[in-house]
Image 1 (cartoon, rainbow, N blue to C red):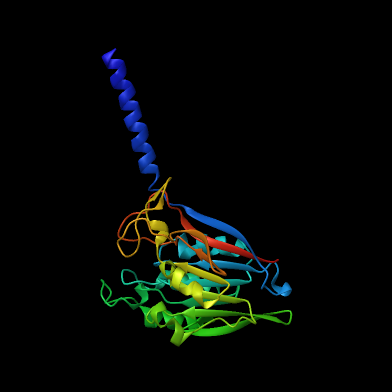
Image 2 (cartoon, rainbow, N blue to C red):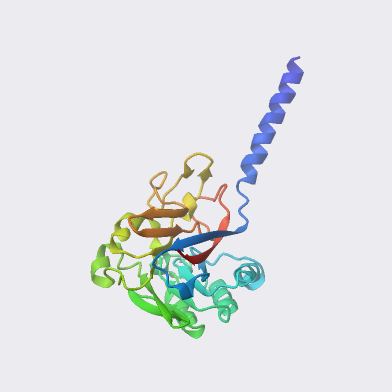
Length: 274
């Protein structure tokens, strides 16, 4: 009887151990959202946007072939890159492969994250200046506290980018309120700023930075915030405050704490006119 109980106990222990270990497997995942807006021009009904965030020069196949294929298969109209594409721990090579592979897929817009500005690390800091050159070479629009217009069939929407260095604290001075005569998209690296940024009237925000909370538990969501607090309010998915909708990507790259129950994510958004 005692031996039987020990065997059962050992089986339970091994099962739990296997499940815990499986949680560290973080495959590439495509997350899809259909979002409806009354403010969207009819010409943009069905418009497709792919978001890449917190790439951290992570390798997905030879020369980023798997990541590039995943994006291409969605046939996007627009690609947005919401920061931490390069960092202080890696060379710029994988970022180059990624942008070169996506150059002819769709127009790309990029805004910085915190890691682009880090000055330490084994390579003397993040290769941000070199990455900017690669962006220019591959027709990526860098939104450094700037707004651009996107046109489709004679209609226009606006896309703005809040640079990490200036942060949301300077939002009023560097970008200000959305022009409500347009449908407005805002790219901002840090999802934690959503409550503040939702005051400014942007219809749709794309953010990241939180890495999905790194460790995701079935009840409670992400455990770790990027500021080393626990259970962040905005960690992954869709959020709505005031008249703004935020898409928060759990990102692609690694952080100091290993990801658990937290796949690496490419976000696909399809816009619909209500």
